[in-house]
Image 1 (cartoon, rainbow, N blue to C red):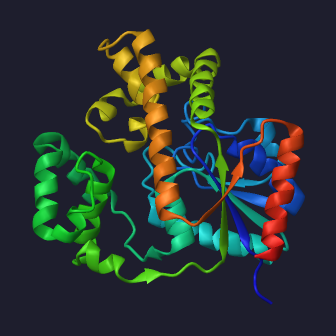
Image 2 (image 1 turned 135 degrees about the vertical axis):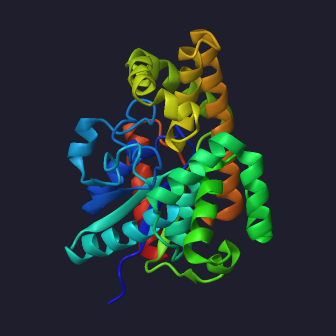
Amino acid sequence: MAPPKIPVLLGATASGKTALSLSLAAALNAEIISADSRQIYRELTIGSAKPTDEQLARVPHHFINELDLLDPFDSGAFAAQATERIADILNHGKRVVVVGGSTLYLRGLTGGFSDLPKGDASIRARLLDELHQLGAAALYERLKQLDPEHAATLDDTKTQRLIRSLEVIELSGKKLSDLHSTVKPPRFEFILFGLDVPREALYSRINRRVDEMMQNGFLEEATRLYEQYGERHRAKKINALETVGYKELFEYLDKKITLADAISLTKQHTRNYAKRQLTYFRNQFDVQWIPAPTSDYEALAAVEQILAHLCHS
């Protein structure tokens, strides 16, 4: 008997994925696989829009509050581990709902992933020191010499991917472009559902969410992280703290901008991020788009629409 099709609920930040995923999981007797590259970290709570304790208690969640900020983790590790957890959940007679907006996590899980070597802390630490001393441009030039095909696919400002690329080449002795040519196909059939929110409404949601985050203690959370990790952040040694919101509040705490500017920039950069997410989803994935619900009635209708599609696809 073939394993059941697995619904993937994706969408831009602030589109309402968390609330709908809980309703869908309840209808399917499912556990939730979170495909969010920030909610996996224990220290990032308010700024990552993590589900509340009450929401986490309603349905078992995976890949939330599982790592510390200094723990190495990437999309390949997520895809491999999530695949194994999905198999285990299904073997125990339950269903699975995948939810998230991290494009590389979703791509690796649903489209297959390369079997890359695990990270090496000593190599990564050395590369991070070189990044701090030499700068990203120098390391990017090194990558261009080692693997020009892969280097051409990278944004040289995305230092985490740059470091990981050099780390993998050093560990494997192979070009990443060659390793990526041998992709493990996904073990399960995923059906992707996207929450469609009119752009102006989405931007209003984002602005409102940022205001609510500030009211709920986001500055205090960022201050604790700044006091603990500020030096590492300035040396760009913790990629997760480059996240929108934390980055702007760190600039405020560095006395580079005002708090009002930090809040305004967080809203602007979150809107920009949402736009990039949607562009990626529409160009790279085969997504069944459904209107994002704005009421309990609409949420029920959305769940019924997803269930019907799963039954007939």
